[in-house]
Image (cartoon, rainbow, N blue to C red; front, side, top):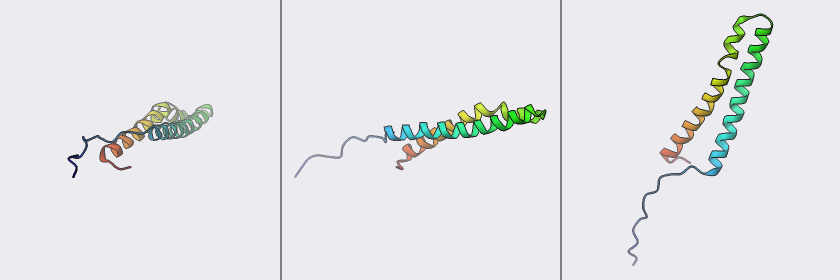
Length: 83
């Protein structure tokens, strides 16, 4: 008979693999979305369509928001214990 009880509670931790995948995913998704918006918007702006600036100006912030949303999804998954 052993007197060993359950170990102390340790919350889920983010692994190195998850951080790498998050960085790669955020970088690729942000580059694709931001680059597409920038390319199409600049193409329209060069042709004289001023509506192209509505795509160019939010391209960089939207790319960052995608990474932020992916990081929140990872944090929620770690908190709930889903792996």
